[in-house]
Amino acid sequence: MGLQLKFKVESIRKIPNPYLSKEDGEKKAMMYMAICDVKNLPDNIPMETNPRKQKLTMGVPKKIKASLLDESYLDFYLLNRGLCISAADVTFNNYSNEICVSFDDFECHGDVDGGHTYKVILENRDKLDYGRQFVKLEFLTGVEDIFQRLAAARNTSTQVQDKSIAELEKRFEIIKRAVQYEPYASNIYFEENDQGNIDVTDILAILNMFNLDLYPDMEKFPTASYSSKKKCINTYIDYHKRYGESSENPYIKMEPIMRDLFKLYDYIEINMAKYYKEKFPVGKYGLTKGVSVAKNGELYRSKFYGNRMEYLSPTGFIYPILGAFRALLREKNGVYTWMKNPFIVVDDLGGELVATTVERSRTLGNNPQSVGKDSGNWKTLYMTVKLGLLE
Image 1 (cartoon, helix red, strand yellow):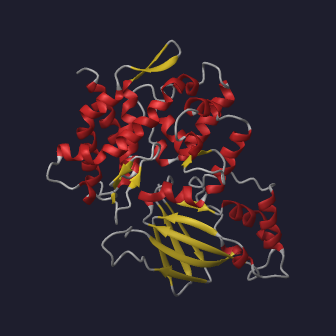
Image 2 (image 1 turned 30 degrees about the vertical axis):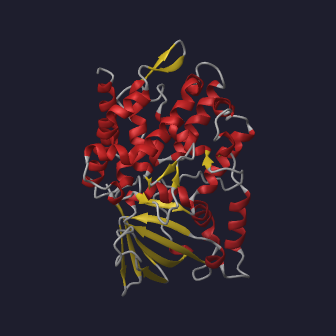
Image 3 (image 1 turned 90 degrees about the vertical axis):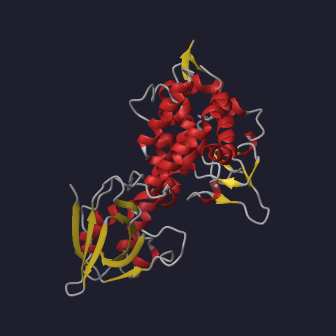
């Protein structure tokens, strides 16, 4: 059941998509910028899409409130970033100055950023008269396929806070122990502004794929590893709070095979083009939508070991393929172990796994983001690896 909100705005402008006339780029997305009297702002904008919990007792909301209620400076819309809202459709009635915003899917339509501003406005606008303070509204349509990336990009400070607190509480010692002798160990950053190129949130997303306590079979799949890094952070922290470093913590059970997971990621990443060629001998992997080709002799580097690569594959391809190897894991004597060497299996099945993924992307409009979120693709790849156990 969708939702339509109609309300007056002072002004609105549609920002043309710069990629509409170009061969590449995201063409479905559209942007609208509006200015609205805070008194006219609807009180039921969907908030399920905002990853932050709005705590109005913190310092930032207090500053927002002070700025909103300070009528000696009528410039709230200039000082505040406003609200960023994802929607299915936006229309404007020139006669009534009303905007109509449609929300169809509450998993990707609603407030993306500016939740604190919104809550502060709702709680305090009764203290203001009409025409005193205004708020800036940014509406985005056609962003369903990139929504998770959009939400993560607009809400980086939440992830920063979560992982920084976890680092202060020494919750990442499991990971640090597991990789301490690996060449990339010093390249992982656990707090924002740390040195390094590998975000611990990416580490947690990969580990989440192999959590047998959470994903023991084919009933559900770890699509959150691709679509919601925030959930992966929370999952890791919640398990650590509950079990610490006891044997009941699945990440302790995972510790003996952690290094294998990151090696496997790199191995898949550097061999994607080779596996593609196995199934499409005359095809060109570099022409696949979402794949980047090195230019001017500047080769790409693999994520963990820095191996040189001609092609950079989208994580929407790599994650479901990597996650399929959960099918080779079992718990034995309180730890996770491999039932079969994953590197042998990936060489045997790599062509099929890559072909399945690329073909799925094509059926989804040549969209790697959709593939990364598609539980059906995760299931197909998982079953392919599972059957590989029988050979």
